[in-house]
Length: 187
Image 1 (cartoon, helix red, strand yellow):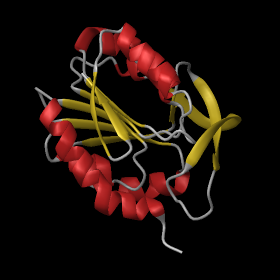
Image 2 (cartoon, rainbow, N blue to C red):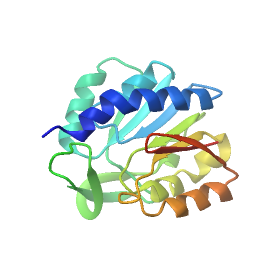
Image 3 (cartoon, helix red, strand yellow):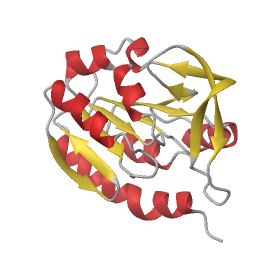
Image 4 (cartoon, rainbow, N blue to C red):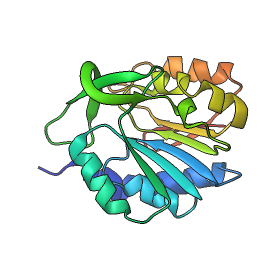
């Protein structure tokens, strides 16, 4: 059985990157989550000066670190959230190496994007299996200060709170501008 994460990386991510690049006025700093084994961060690194990427599954994180070598990418092992601390993950589907969901309890670090203390942010792109609302709340200062393009995976099964994320972004002055495959983009 083929791994949907591999198909996604090879067939879908290039289209998504092409789409989001058209939306970004500046291409200095990108924050990407769901780094998987490096495909999305590597593609972003071709266009952005610096890419921060987060991955909470230890086996994927190991592959991510190997794949980026001396690139302009800063890998972070952990989960994005609206609070600091720790959490865990569980694999949702056996045949999908990219479908890990967060859960309470565990030793995986939880980070807030605001804790990066960025001096610039042009893009926040999330593929974090339903934790988008929390991650965006943890980026409220960054979003307010820099107004980055924001993208996230919309899958009704994985992210039933898309309406809540849309309301949050609308309240911050964002407008939905379109989608590429399952990802929705806002400016």
